[in-house]
Image (cartoon, rainbow, N blue to C red; front, side):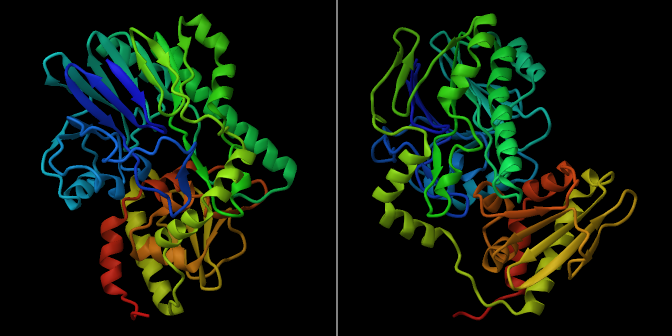
Length: 444
């Protein structure tokens, strides 16, 4: 087995006479025009990679299986994924006209060729994401992407499938928290450090649970390149070097060798890690990102403009009706998880309207077209982006992971997990299509 790490969660594997491409990300930016691949090289595309024998997709996030990336691959590429309840990934592949999609049930092991097998591992708390285990040439590889598991869930993998030789593990979460939340500098610093520690803990828990022969921190090769956003890079997520330094003792205690790979580097059981030096000169710090943003300024500006829907003049009554219909669908879909939620949430479109959504145990959520002033959290975003969420292809993940959302918390308010899961896990594609047809805007 020869493994090439292409940056972020992309692996290209040569094994048992076949090639596998896992979680490709060719087309940028993603998440509302926010994320660009970083460090710069390599920039794989379908024209610079050998055609894969198989394409493996862990979940629907655009930095793992985006429409622009899928468009660069042959539609007849045998594609494997785990089916999820929402059907969103299935719809994406159908729209991309992929003709050979093979759905594997959770924990189902599929032999793709003699001596080559893959297994999709589900998230242990119900998220629509999976890990991928590839077995070939006497090697068992774990691809963790965006699927951080509990220590017990990692141990279940070893119990079911056997010891892991090399594990590619996530180590940095991504969201607009805490930089999108208001607060004084001291509070912001405290939140950022806490979030970094949470990312480092993810990496350590993978080592403790899997006890792999080797572990590689990965799935964080991206940066914000937009002017005004650059300073947010690395303030709330650790670097790979920090993850390796923080986990040295844990790795030693569990018999794991830590491996520092850069995009473009290779690994095989015979050679170990081979450094190609393709990212030389680009460090994971704000100054390096700023230098890259300046170098790519014209391309970045055009790409963001193309990715982000311009603000449109939406009549207040139209926006209000569309938002109310959208939240009615969201609440109906999330109702089983909201029974114990008690909070007052506010939503505000800049200069275009506001809404209050109130939750109480045992009561039906109440939506009003105004802010009441006692909201625990108030989410603010440009009216054009709210309209894009309600009636277009954008969703809450685009503004949350894209650092576009601004949140004002009431002092003393807690973290309302059920509320955020309602937003981020709502598969709004079909709702948005229906509302776009119901509330058309005149062509400008």
